[in-house]
Image (cartoon, rainbow, N blue to C red; front, top):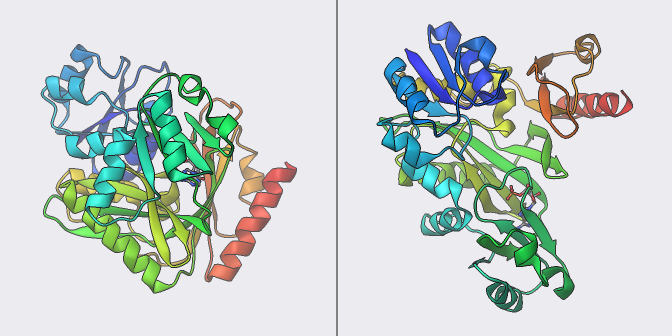
Length: 360
Ligand code: AMP
């Protein structure tokens, strides 16, 4: 199989690293000069909406997928490309109001929200929902970008202009116990596999740490139900992730990603079939592999620069993933997976690694 991937960042790179053992070949479309996935396949250097490049991708690949959700869906459809996952998933993931509406339709609880298209509408939403709130641009937001918290009436004044006079979604700020996510994969025949719920920590909008944890099984069951409902509603093919806030014993849906996800990276090293390989199996029509893990696993993102591998690898059951990207503050340049025989040992090893990274 020859797989086309729109985007050639670390997710594309890890897709290729998972697919090459299955005899797959990869072609990436990405405007960057030397994106980090390019070493793992052919690189078409062009804008994502370049009609000639999209036509060439369609002509050379058996199937086309993507590594980020803000791909230009219309240009891709105009090029005659049948994407996997398909346009319904992109439409819902690219627009936060559509996403929240879908969550509500399929029974995923969400924080109270309003779509607002002007400063007066924002003022009305503040009055209706009460403070504190969070405002988010409805399109093209990621890693906390295009977001502003509204704690006082002054925070809301002029906020519509400050966020660029673009459509916004305003929602209640949730006083959550933790941020969790679930990653799963659906095959074209409807089979679904789901990985264990992960507990995640973000700092400055960027994921720092993700680990499988001992959750009460009721939460895991809710997560599986929500993931299945979403995948079925979208007739989804491939790996997807839903991010939740947990409040007591309820999962509130925050957002979903129609792609492999940072909070599932530990699946590469934890004994089952990784989220990357399952995505490829799904989009290529192969049988899926199980999502349960042999061992509890977690990962810590390397942000800014990658410390010397020898230091990172000194810990037991530690796996380094260096994306070979130029260092830059705030940029995800790699991750380290840690596994352990039990969750207590895992948490200790992850704590040690975090401390080591802070001291480096
Ligand atoms: P998002 O881009 O929607 O994933 O938001 C980025 C991060 O902002 C989330 O991971 C949360 O830490 C925080 N956040 C987003 N929405 C809310 C909310 N309604 N209540 C509390 N924190 C939020």
